[in-house]
Length: 248
Image 1 (tube, rainbow, N blue to C red):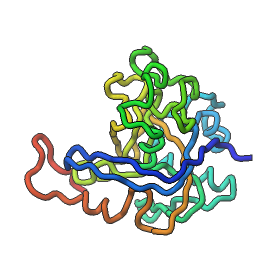
Image 2: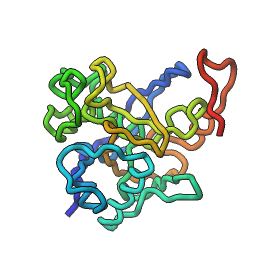
Image 3: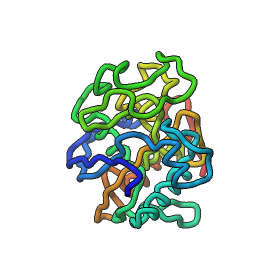
């Protein structure tokens, strides 16, 4: 039996925002499936067998690279084609694979918003754990109210890794994470808030939520494209005040 509860979502649109480039654009999404809750420590322990017996608390302290490997392990356990392979130091997304993967940033925001357009899909105290709750650790998943897609904990509790690069011109290979965590101020726990970190970085309020969905174009899918990553890595004109680009 499948280990993970994924909810199928129909095709739709979501508007994304790049603050540095002062750009907004609309992404058309094909159908995909995404986890009803973040991956738990119990699910990780059951599959990987290398952590202490787990609980229904969200898995945290996992790097982006470990999340990629977890996705592949989950796929192989269920005889699905793994979504990722490693080529030297690069992770390649096999977009036509049926296996588990990280959501793209566009998929994540579409899933979180569930048809809403505001900062949150409901009253924050009803849908999310934030610093207002004065927690020292994440809470067990699924205790707050779901959004209209039946997804819980997309906001608050723990941040969630996505597939996309954050801002390659400024941050190199940093990957996006979304959603806010239990220690974050309520004003920052919003559907549009985006942060990121190095692929080898972990944090006690950063986990993941699984997705699935296969697509024909090997170089572009669900709001992500290899060409766009390359273009975003270029710097044209004056640098924004206060930063210099990362050196590769």
